Picture 1 (cartoon, one colour):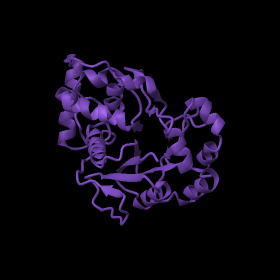
Picture 2 (cartoon, rainbow, N blue to C red):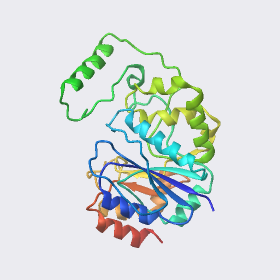
Picture 3 (cartoon, one colour):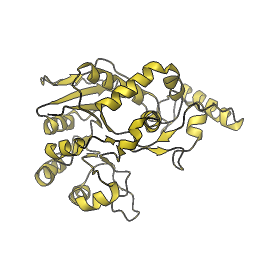
Picture 4 (cartoon, rainbow, N blue to C red):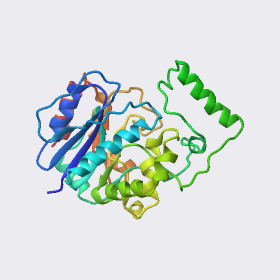
Length: 294
């Protein structure tokens, strides 16, 4: 039976994390958990297939910490030599299909990650041709470091001090389910090309370009299918109305049951996971288990 390695980025909502792990647990399944360094509380578990990695990174939106945490999870999982698939989730995700359905989709042998040639209108070139800093609270600015870094970023753009882009860029969303061979290729690429991390360390929102560019420039690109995690930034009713809530509600649970509508949007694959939930989402978790985990 194929092994599934779940890589989970966590910063809070440990009760929901327990529900997530319990729902996905089973034979030939392992969990690798990264706890954000900014989190004071410690997550503990007695499950012998759950590994809380020792490396902890402070993750800020738009910064490279997200990539470092993901790479630490990948390397820890690869060390176990389980093979199979590597599925990147956050601690506020939850499966909206049964474990059998998840295995059925993964058994197709594709690479499930959104990838398009970059740049795109909503992922513009200035993300990649200027230095950007891994700074806290871009959405709520404060502190001396923040203002100095932002001043340097604006100075570059004002005087068009651009960096050379040494790679053909591919962009997409962060979440993925990738085969063992693809992960092996990615880690070998990083080992053999020391300049790769040096370049992408300074781009803005690197989790939307880092892995995508490696795969897009490789033989694995031909096997790419759509990402299998539903995000609330998608158009929830497919008529142009964006999601109004940052947390899963009854509206979304009903939508998840309309598999044909999903398939028309996502193509051959379908969303197997959704985000976001929190510690107060027990009601919706129970509904999903009852309605969709059959």
